[in-house]
Image (cartoon, rainbow, N blue to C red):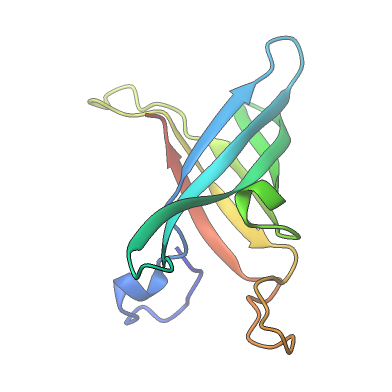
Length: 141
């Protein structure tokens, strides 16, 4: 969710991205690796709408702050993911389970920042600017 301060903003206008993140945590070291994918569509030469995946390669660490498990992740674009030059950073923590919670999923919450501008047109305009932030939550599937 984009970090907008207008309480009257249309809820749908706050959407930043919906994606699937696959994370692998190290067993003996606090390292995290993985990928994040979201689906886009495009029209091919035949005029058909085709779904394809874009994404980022994820690296990072988890650490402990008192009784809370926190994480810092970096997402880097790649040619194979159609995101060359992109970089997003993620910071947050694992939400502790409520003792009286019912069917509570394992959840990560935090914030993401676009580190590098990207997707500029041929003239270098219309970029997605660096510095945009959004709140994130990831629910274990």
